[in-house]
Structures are given as structure tokens and as C-alpha cells.
Length: 152
Image (tube, rainbow, N blue to C red):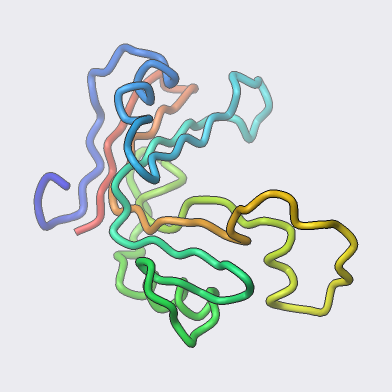
């Protein structure tokens, strides 16, 4: 974060998304949302985020906020943490200015409703693993420009 205010700054980066992410990929919870160079209308932005303020995982239907088990369900935790963020939309028509990023596995649905278990759990992964990111680098393919966004 640059300072204690909301930022949306156009950057002079000339590298492509993969090359930029390579600088950060070794960090825990580094994440890249890559639109894969598609020409689809919804493939306009690539997002890179690192160093989440908080992490949230669901393992065996139990929620862990920053590796500490919580009695709240993961969706209550997410909403509570999001309530502290500035909800003003980022400039330049960017789609993200802070929030949760990560993955939600199919088996997370078992925390919401009764889904039959048919598969053997052969991969030891959390049902969900997300981070609350206050900063991000965003590449806009239409403008061919990089932006830095951050929360206060």
C-alpha cells in the first residue's frame, strides 16, 4: 500500500502479465487471474495480487481465519471482513479495488446444503482457500495499460 488512502494509479509497466507475475509468484498466496489472451468481451482484465491482509480456508467444513479456527461459517467471515473496505468503485472502469480472491472448491457446497458424497477424497486440498487483498495490479487489455489499486 502506498499510503492510508484509496489509490488508483496508471503505471508505466511494459511487461506482459506472465512476466510481471513471475516477480511475485514465489510469495505465499500470490494470485493471478489471467484472462488468457481471449478476445471474449469478458476477458478484458488480468489481475495480480499478493500479500493478503487475511486468509480464509475451509477444511473438513471448518473455517480458519488466518489459521485460527472460527465458529462462524466462511460466508459470515467474508461478509464481516468486506464490511471494513471502502466500497467506492475504482477509477478507469477497473473491476477490482480490493476484496477476496482465491478458489472455492465443489465440496464447499457441502457447507451450504446436503450434497451426496460420491468421490473419494484423494487430494488433500482445502474446500476453499482465499485471501483478502487490499492491493492489486490490473492490466486492461483495451487500454493496454497497467494500474495499481489499493484500499486505505
